[in-house]
Image 1 (cartoon, rainbow, N blue to C red):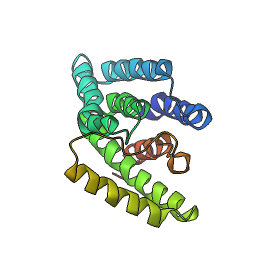
Image 2: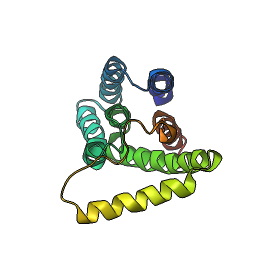
Image 3: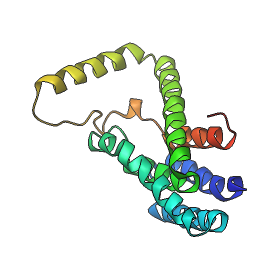
Image 4: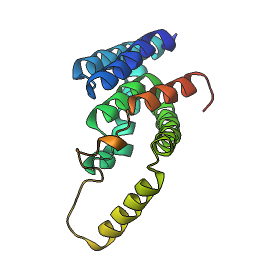
Length: 167
């Protein structure tokens, strides 16, 4: 049953991300309201506690990645909306599955574009700079178009993995 409530929001997020590289807040808000209603109808008043826990989990786990511009705010909000449907345990599973899918996706894109060696060198250099520098700097600069990853796709894959019981 969750399939019919959550997946339309996930699919719309992917379409918006691919088209404009932005997931509208109205879409996230609508999905969150649906998630709260789903939890309430399934679990009664305790469903709202489950909803709140599932919603906050991605923020607590991934908020720091946004600070370093490694993950966009829309992506975190999409995971928060999804977590509201799943609760804490499902939210953690979805985050893990999404990052696994994103890693595979990123490796495939980097290999296809012949960027793998350069991206690994960039990562190592970034880690070295962070070790010795006190000044904060983002991981990826906005002009680095070649390394843009549509994270809504791995979130959709993670959602399907959790729904399908794979993870």
